[in-house]
Image (tube, rainbow, N blue to C red; front, side, top):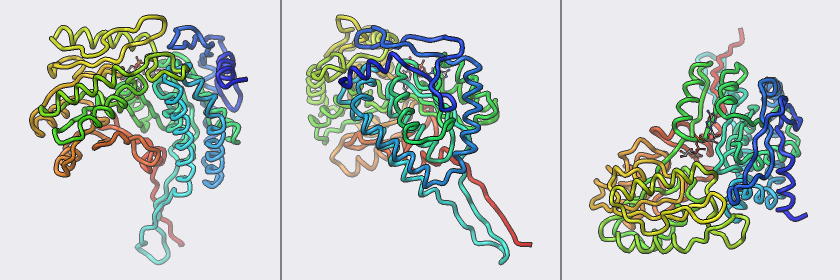
Length: 487
Ligand code: NAD
């Protein structure tokens, strides 16, 4: 059986994982999972009913009692073995990812390998869960600071990175000693199921990781209200993040990590390597058809570099080969769903109404599936929709600026604060932008801001908390101070 055949077969047996058993929903509810390249069904995804969610909560509670007492060195072993299995199964998982999400297979392979790396990194970090000894005030006493797992976690992940985002949440929670109930995106369930299968096959005890699906608002409300859950981690839109954070506050003041939307500005200065910058910007903008929360997504180019940048960027966009991700010649796949196609039309219509120029693309691609052409827009005013709102798709607005102060002011003008980028050869400019850009992650002459070992997260309305790095592990820990004396 080829990896693609195997992947297709897996879609015919999608299940939830509850208490160590692969199950269908108790009430028989389900939804169809579509291939975004054809809009044809790939398989049926079971939905959890209230009784299934109660079982998952009970399992997570029991799983927590066991896993939080499991020595770090054993947790490390299970996470390392999970990573090894993900690597071994890379090709079939990547095929599932591409079929359900649409990105080119080469990108899917990279994402699966990146997910294995996240498990490895967190596995190693289990050995560095240090506390602190504070010099005691008396000879017969001790003052200790210890880190303990926060408790059972409810995790909610979106469809744009079906492997990487669940990997960050699952590996972080398990490394810290937490149990987890994850609700991956219903659009892209297969990849997360395969990650969970790798955990089970690696020897993770039953109940420590549970995977459920259903109507997102119903599942999240049920789990966030549940007294067993002590931590919420969500990746998705700002509106939903605010809603979940409010629920978490109301029902037990639960801790949250909120990784929400972004609309990353890119400042390209006259002294930058303009053509190289344009090519890198286009590559990162159109990666995953632009459905990346840290994608460079509004471009401000200094007057002297503007025409050269526009030209090189537009050429790079026009060179992309649109097609099904599973086809080896494809360099940009479809959007994940019909909603994104409608959203792209909204950005382009608004631009046209404001006198913007469409330099490339600008329309839906012919044929079945959710395809939108790589699109470049120029001469847009700052109040155009594409300049103000996260595009989350292959639409790139490019504008001109004159001074550094002006560029920083326009870059920081929105309520987003996830990623921001700049290109310049000047050390002074580099320091000014890295200090002045209001974002949780800043790349200067670089887009490498998403790494297993580095904190990933936003400020302002892009959310709070980090995933990755030592900060990412800290998100699943609580601090306890212990004062003990010999009487
Ligand atoms: P959406 O807000 O409806 O859904 C985004 C994700 O959140 C989906 O996976 C969905 O299942 C989940 N979700 C929605 N409501 C939920 C709820 N009440 N409880 C728990 N999970 C819930 O938006 P969409 O149309 O699917 O995607 C479009 C927007 O979502 C984008 O414009 C972008 O802002 C945002 N998004 C952000 C990221 C990210 O990485 N930060 C990823 C995907 C989508």
